[in-house]
Image 1 (cartoon, rainbow, N blue to C red):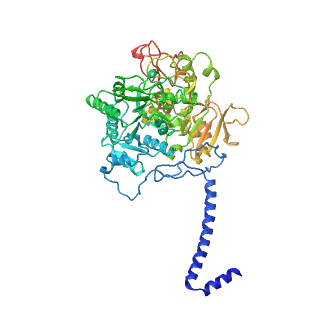
Image 2 (cartoon, one colour):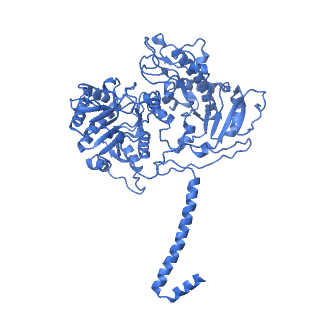
Image 3 (cartoon, rainbow, N blue to C red):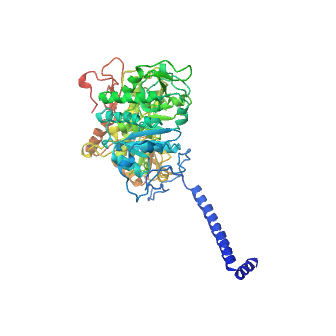
Length: 634
């Protein structure tokens, strides 16, 4: 009744009041629907999976899909709960509209004005590369943006990279290098050219008056480094190093006169002082005058010409170069090399949180670097990487305690341990090839380290634990495993993934929820019948010692399953029925293993791993005894 009386009063009022009443009523109705919609949307958001931000325009959220197959039945279960994920809460990359034209190259010229747009607290962070390293650059950018660090720029050495980064909203500038778009390879003339471009870049930016944190693209940030660098305002240059033995046990700078490793120019910070600008200029002139000098060696040589004394008693800095430049050496425990992070895990043992990891001290080229970062779940891959065609195959390796812990840690016990694992991996590779699945490589245990020079197994003074989970490239040639080999000669391709992929937060729900456990059993025991291809509780019982035909018969119904997990592969597979295919497989996987290096007092000191060591009676872990023996066991 009150509502009707109100309406009658409005009808009898002047037009102005009629308009006001109408607007108020419409506003109430709209507000009601807005609040209802917001509540409904928030409930939906709370019930949906969180997603990691991406740089591409067309990436889609992973859908929670289950597979539909006829008998046998496979159970899909919810994924395990995961720890906190790095998720961007806001967009800090300036992605241009798709209908916008690409600006001219002149727009991307390196100028003080361009740098000034990105500077924060007078600091600019810079990396550079060519198109072959675009995925490394996107990983570098993502790690910084996840840390909400935005004052960075990327130098493009070719126009293909420049355009690709521009359309992803990454702040980029043109280095005018006209570099090849392919991977140039460490140590090549083009690689050294890239090093000179870095020095030219430093010499160009310092006169702008900004602090410069210069980085290689094959490193990632784990923690915002700027507060740490600001702790040393007197330093002209702060550099990382190849130091393997800690000189401090906290997060202070290394003790400069105890550092024996080379200064590494993959991560270093420059302040625009007269001494640092003088250093950059002389370093550039040195490299341009002699193209045989490696940029890092030149940097070390020029600093060590005049090194010492310390700058005060407790600054952590040292006078270097011209006697005026103040140098600090970043602690290798938290500004990590590929050895202090992936092998020693020095930061863990000292109870520290790392700022960065640089993929040095590794093998297998660029592919080895990617694989190491992927093992540590630090690499940014597109969604399809985690959901390969044909699905994934994993297995739980079995290692006797005696092989891990008994006896001395030496060459013989190391090879006994690794060979035991190689044999299982060989079987898993065969099964993956047979089922056309991507093999999840297991974590690999080693008892001794791998280096380029003779050593006693573990370098004295380092924190390397024995045994330790070693990077895959310590034993396997990751670059060969990922190389496209002709199928007519080497059989079907066998793709691989890192051991941590099933724990990666980026793994799509449709992969997490679609699995089958395969348990090996002894034929004749209950529920272990090669003719019975049913499953109970998501578990398939598979008799041991099966050949190609039995594997295909029992596992072909599960082609739609995303992940097949073997409880073990020992004694699982007796071999291919097609002997020609088996011969091609053998030819392929023989190339997958590399060398261990290096024994003391012997030249050459390396020892070849052998994928089929168990087929050679009397096989021993010894280096080649003659020059004619110095070749892979193919």
